[in-house]
Image (cartoon, rainbow, N blue to C red; front, side, top):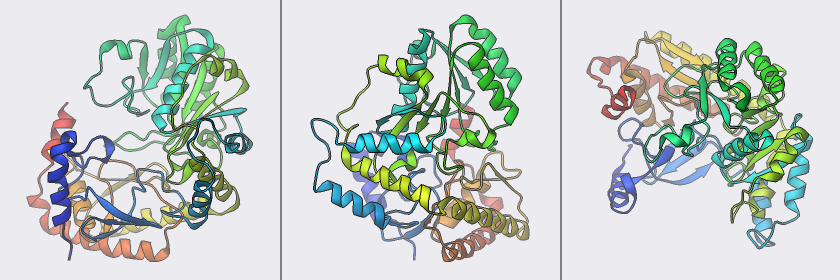
Length: 422
């Protein structure tokens, strides 16, 4: 029997000592009512919350879980490295090993720099683009997410106009809009940022159009600016290389995070020789950026990426997940919109402008042991089995049945309505 007594008590305590009780993407304010906030165990593809409820986790920590929570090979190297050295006065030799491994795998890259979060990597990319030729204007796809720094956070609190004074916005996958944005930048164009695919929240996802990607590369070359692919979210879930290799376009810089250490805190910026001198001009650092344990985890993660069929496996699982949900939805009289890559699935309901169906469905599935998101792309991981899928479909089948019974009484989330109106 599902229960959330301990979770509610923890939320009450947290509200006294943490602003809002929680913050950032770990806050459940955007999630359906009763979604768990606190977790005590993670193994493979499953999470256990503070009340002991177990879930098949399709969020994967918002991405980092690529190979399975607590993967034994990665856990082993983490444990072994902790007995030697981790955070110290300088990096261990592993930083060179890891840079060599990444440069050997990412086709466009000649060098690597390491940090902690995706926002660190995108901030470095921004600085390098501006340092490259001393220019200021940077192009961003409208509504694209590149981290939580003031220049790109989706929330306006604490942000002033000057933080975004030199950004020009265009529509993703629209070559003409991109061309117009470049023209607006004139001779002050520093760089073009691109997501690996359109993965905005609350909307259908779009794979990159080859013409759009080629246009971005051509315009960057023509104006001697740097092309940046922010692969933090999709890295190694679309390809064993930079995601835009799938459309035959190589950037100057690519940002990596999420999966790199399979849960260990590490991210990276990769670049080509064109951008090397500019990378040497910026000053960036962090007390924990050179820690050895996450680098050991990343080296082992990369080995497993190279040597196993993880990508083929998560692709197959993703295809089965999509097909199974479509079949169930149709049988209960619902229409779904499933867009984007199957390894990062986005599931939205047709004729659901205020998301009451999506929220109701995810809440019903959660109470039956499946953790889904009604507004954010999800993630497949290589620990997922056919039994996990079977258990998922048992829960989602019951969730669709519950949704059909209760659809007339469902109400949109007040928080969601406020955010959408804003």
